[in-house]
Picture 1 (cartoon, rainbow, N blue to C red):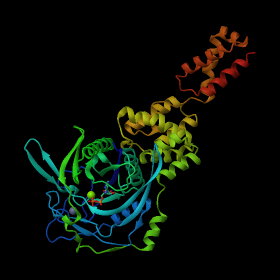
Picture 2 (cartoon, helix red, strand yellow):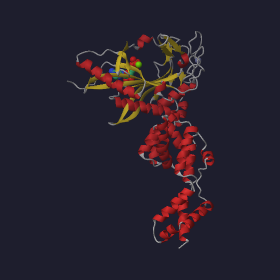
Picture 3 (cartoon, rainbow, N blue to C red):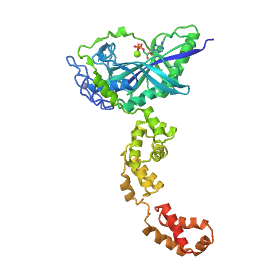
Picture 4 (cartoon, protein in one colour):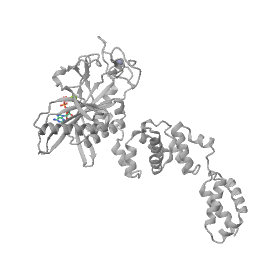
Length: 479
Ligand code: ADP
Ligand code: MG
Ligand code: ZN
């Protein structure tokens, strides 16, 4: 029996994090009361005209530049016509003939090594609304808040040969778009959605098989499972001598299977034509230069720099650069405390533990970004000890307290001034003659006894180093 391989191409939709929609001034904010972010334009009233939000073009060009694409200098928008209740105009404004970016490539890393995935194109378009099915009344309602939220559709070449590659690519896209600040790419909120096109063919052949498309799968885990299931299903059909029909299938994550949704439309079914309401967009060389010159440092470059210039272990650098929220905390912390290793240790051990214990995602952390650096500085300056530092961090994490004020209020400051330490130690020495003579007779253990007693008397707030030195000094004066 022939062995099969999977061939996959992805269409990924990302909602752009512009403040307003693509063709009107309505807010793009997620989670508003239904139908409160709408106007005549995005609800498709006859006679209204779209006005392009320039920011969308900027975000598209930035994305295309980061994904090594050619930027189309003369672009325009086209109408994709279809009727559906979440699309009040009965057409979506998109780009068919001149997408803004083409011919890019993305490097991914998997257990099999490094590989490039081709980007066929990236185009700009508007999102549709959302249908909400109410199981109690049996009615379906429509929320137009999402209508007109700007999207980039990133279409890959059919270059994937495993679920692992697909997931590595999606993570890479997510990192890149987040670093660029163009999309938050939250799959659980639908701001990043992937359609998976999959076909099978005997290993060693070059022709593509007929593909099916699985739409809008809601998480990376589910995408992995859907791919494995659909691959097996197609192999079974082909091995039994059957034919795959080109169709859209839906993945049911609970039942762990795909089923037919509809047979696939072709481009001609949409009767595309250039949108007469929008002017063509011409992108100048100057505009491109300016964007290239102002590209932020992306994840890979940052990770390399953390390892080579800041001396972080590869593992630490990977964890921190895997999340733009951690990067933000890390860079501010280093700026304040001047010590990259300390900063990454505190983030990897203490901060991530707080996140885990509270089941809080990195991007949900909510405290003044300067706080961690200030805590570390207090510890390394000997102002508080490490244990108190952890206590302060927990309070910062939970209630966003000001570290210095918290230390003051809870009297966590270490006593390192000798005026406070010496009298306490002197008294302990005076009260423990036996231990003194043991120490002077050469018993090192008695030293620990004095240090322990002193720390206890000073309620753990004394600087251990200062206590140790003072104990030794005072005991030696008795020789
Ligand atoms: P459509 O416009 O119908 O969505 P496209 O030609 O734009 O189709 O391709 C959509 C996606 O499907 C692309 O990511 C492409 O790489 C992928 N694709 C095309 N043919 C195949 C195939 N035979 N097997 C797997 N993926 C494919
Ligand atoms: Mg498609
Ligand atoms: Zn609007």
